[in-house]
Length: 282
Image 1 (cartoon, helix red, strand yellow):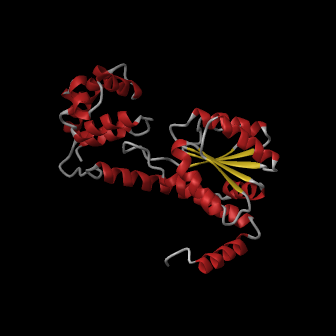
Image 2 (cartoon, helix red, strand yellow):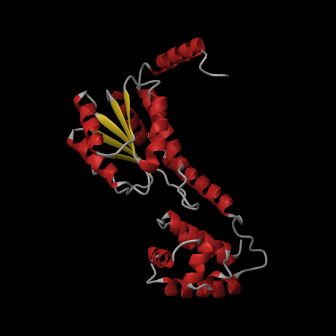
Image 3 (spheres, one colour):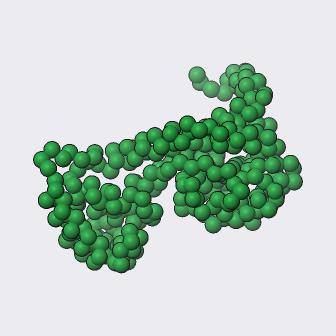
């Protein structure tokens, strides 16, 4: 990868870009020498987006408009050519490798954060004690919530998966509270749905302690009394990659199992029934 491509990659990292804006960013990274001389119309055509999308992209990066971004690209190209050395190999050359390495970085950060187990063990105790246990995940976070709920149901007597928004969602949260729930687990991933924040407000109003697995320690859905656990998401592809939050969810599940005295016996009963019914091929 050239110095110009590396600089472009660093410029885009840390910004919350929409899928359309990421397509524009990837188009620029693939054309680092050509990028500083493209008009907004030309860039829009290459990326397959509208010209206003290019303008919004530049503003999302903190520039007044596309002309200001293009001037900065030209400066970086000039400076990069002057500074680059013959042995400057740079990071991997394609977008897929960069996405994988970014996720590895997030997993390393998560591993370091889990050196202190106090918060995740507290989360496990809170979730283990809740009867029933509502698990919330809307839109992009529905997959993580569904995976957690699937496995949690093998060790917890009453798991209630909540992945559909609308007015019925508030009803289901309140019904869980009325049935004895004391906590709710929420998976919150970008772009954070307004409905998720509204649902968590209902949960807090019903007296539930909210445990949230999110992409950031300052996730917009978090409340001051919540137990928030965070792991970064990858933004190098058109759509977010959430390997670290998914693994964090499994770690929370492990902590919940540790806090459930009958978790192992439940698992053994499930395995026995699964074998009797021939559920699995292996």
